[in-house]
Length: 357
Image (tube, rainbow, N blue to C red; front, side):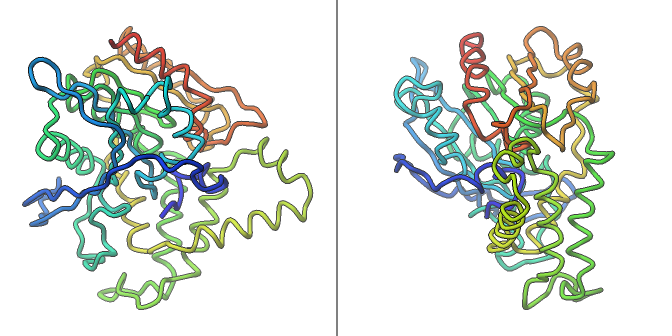
């Protein structure tokens, strides 16, 4: 499912143009305990890799790069041409002849464990902290990695990157958060997320009381409203005006996008995904982030407004290893989804890799 934040840009793009040499597997984390005390005897984390691990003289893997997707996405979105073709090829910043790229599906997403597997609303109420813990166990216990060359992420994955920098300050040699803020999700950002959740829960087809979430048919009305909200908050005004300059073209496009976005949605999965941001707030401990960091947002991002002064204040607390850049808005940028179009920030990645050698 490429429902929203992780794949807004990918939704309008063509399918992958290259058959990248990938490997897919699952890691099962035994007796996984969530932050609220709930447990699963087995938590499955699915992942995709490109390239091969390299070991240094001490026998440790030293070329691992993890790329983290956003809400509603999965690791496969990073195989699309606007991302992969800019980064993975010969001589590119993440040349897979040099780096081992790891693309996990986070809890509740893709082929990893999620409510729609059968537990529905009995699935543990995971949050971002649980996701980062699962990533850590996947890398260390499952893949035998003691230190990452780079952790980067888009949207939700961007927020996870900040959390990694605080929770495991020495685990990654570099961090690259794309399209987020290191503050509690509040204000308008929380409001539209709550509207998405409420649209689904308020649909009579979703159920009430003990039957809530036990639907036989997806609550289509609620999901359609939720998907409509997501299309608006993820939009890029200049880009859409350029591409759809007439009423007819604009109407046809958005109706098609909503229909396409509805195709694979599951109501419980979607509620869990958007609710999982509820405890995110790295702001109090930003000083713990010491790894070289390149943080990039885009000026036409509705979700992370350019006129908030958060970046300026955050940089003062993270020190000289942290850098921030705001991509200017143009008819070519993609709003929040600019994070997936690597051409806009590839130079920032090259510079980060150079200064974290």
